[in-house]
Amino acid sequence: MAAVVFLKRRTGKVHFIIPNEYLLKRDEEAFVSVYGLANSGEDRVKYHQAMDFAHGPDDLMIFDEGDVFIYQDPVTFHKFVG
Image (cartoon, rainbow, N blue to C red; front, side):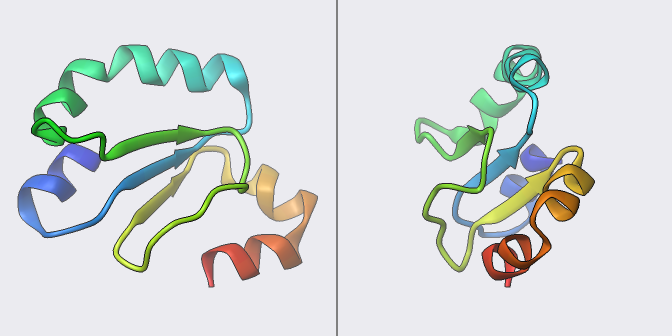
């Protein structure tokens, strides 16, 4: 999905937020070739295990297992994506 976003519209970075380190590493390794094309020499695809990073207004955030973040701390989740 991130590759399509890069190709079809102008966006900042794409942030994948995945709560489980195993899943994060698996996805990062599995899709490196796809996002390599989309990055076009820039480091625009980022992986995170928590909502502890700065993001820009044009960035796209994709939550895998988003319910984990929502149920753990709904107020922080709302502020983060708001």
